[in-house]
Length: 75
Image (cartoon, rainbow, N blue to C red; front, side, top):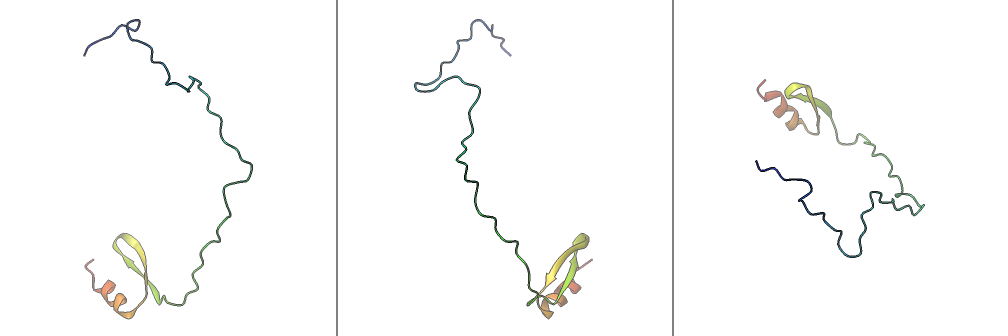
């Protein structure tokens, strides 16, 4: 690994039109970030139950065929 002397490394200058400030001010327009969305709520129209897969992973069951498939999976 090659060592350099700190007094031999040239200082880099900023590109034209820029400064060397450490602080960049935040932009504040005073209006906020947007409207809050309503939380989604499930009405319960399609689900027939909750099944358990690998490592107690709860999954929704929407049909009798899905219930049979989940119960037939290897444990």
